[in-house]
Image (tube, rainbow, N blue to C red):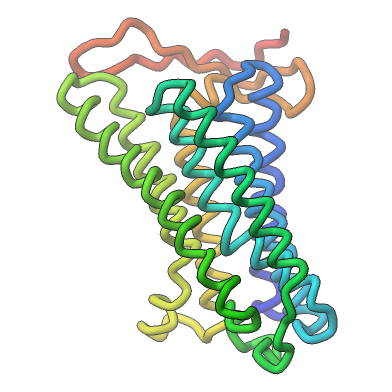
Length: 264
């Protein structure tokens, strides 16, 4: 298995493990932003796995690989990760209304993606070619910027707002770092063109490398956030490996207290 095929498979496995960990946190803490982020991460996993299937079997062998990659990767991932940030920074009524509107728009986009004709000759002929959205008609491709601007916009706004508010108050400075990693990961996932432009990899490897780097950065950002992971547990069990608690905040930020080998 060459690097072009291995990288998206690795990204898919890492992302899926990450998805299960965040879902497990939601099942214990029942925070809405956690389940929304779980949806976004699952789409990340699905897009990376579709990319693996497309590069391994040939994009032209089955257009469903391409459709799944597009709806989950080019449209869904960024939008739902950004939507999770909306639940952190906006009033709940506003966030819920936005989520409903986003979900309706996403369903409509999915219908278009899975019913639109695909120009097979526009798909990569060999695995080393970079996959692009040019296989779809323009009315499908025009949808992508709206979802990506929404998702990346709120990820950026959340990072900037956290940086300003928590830096000014000198509290929860980990939130600043966490949001920066998450935003950086979202940017990395769409940075294949930049990597290729600087000749760091060929077209397909650049996209795969950017996808893997993106999920790793987002993973780090979530791990830093006590709101997402205040404890590290074997997923879907009561076995807690490590617990973090934010003590009363000081001028330098919260103090973290680790507790190991705790079972509940």
